[in-house]
Amino acid sequence: MLKNRRVEMVEVGPRDGLQNESTIVSTVDKAELIRRAIAYGVRRIEVTSFVNPRRVPQLADAEELVTMLPERGDVTYIGLVLNRRGAERALATGRIDELGAVCVTSDSFGIRNQGQTSDESLAAAMEIVALAKQAGRGGQITIATAFGCPFEGEVAIDRVVDMAKRAADAMPREIALADTIGVGAPAQVADMVGRVREAIGNLPVRVHFHNTRGTGLANVWAAVNAGAATVDASLGGLGGCPFAPGAAGNVPTEDVVYLLERCGVSTGLALPQVVEAAAWLTEAMDRPLPAMVSKAPGFPMDFRPFGDQAPKA
Image 1: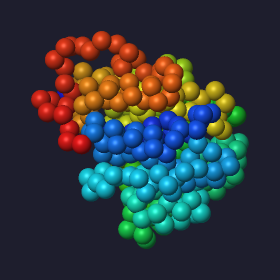
Image 2 (image 1 turned 45 degrees about the horizontal axis):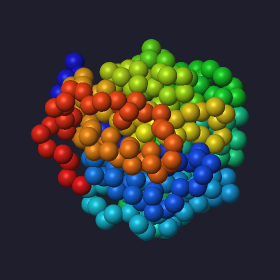
Image 3 (image 1 turned 90 degrees about the vertical axis):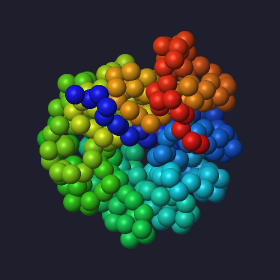
Image 4 (image 1 turned 180 degrees about the vertical axis):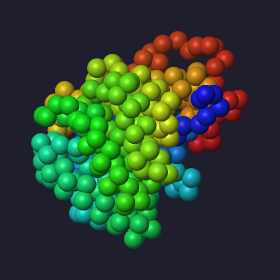
């Protein structure tokens, strides 16, 4: 029974939402996106990635953006990093609260994405968590291509469970399962979340879905039913991976909020403000965005997912 349950949401639009865009988004607009996310209730935000700017030019302004983050003791700013160098850059800013480390299930994707084999990426992720803890910050590990690889195809669930068990030895904040190319299906998601939860004990499971084949929202629902504690989403449904051919956008923040809140699962986000922010983002990007709820009339007219009060900005 999910009614009255609460699920944490992480806004990944500033990083995963923008990293695959061909037109460079201004640092000022990125900072405004983060400010609006805080206003609609998000308290964990993946703000940028500290990666090689030649490979991901959209995020070349990581250090500059971080200086523009609002001073908020109640908001966790996450910086995605792939190696020790990236971790050191993120920690040196003094403003990143949590390092997001990534390991991958396949050698083919790992070498293209971060120049590491699968096992090397896991070792690097565990080292990043250790560095974060030494600096008094948080660290989490995401297992990318958990539901399928664009180069090697199907990924055995036993492989994912084994990686999760090994990753848990680093004692990260959580372990995330990422459907990098949007191939997951609800039954597969439920099985994997359940088995990973069993394997990693008390550590929370976070999920990250792309809506490439239209199964994103169904996968969110399957994951939450299977016990996932945290869901990633991107305002407007922006997103994609530069190193995964055909990977389309993330599940949209507004669509996930509508789904969960209408089913009695609290997200802590105010849908009217999310929709307002999506309208702003549509103008900023100068094109229609994939999300559905922000294009549709409000329903029911008095529906306020956050209750009677909007979140304090």
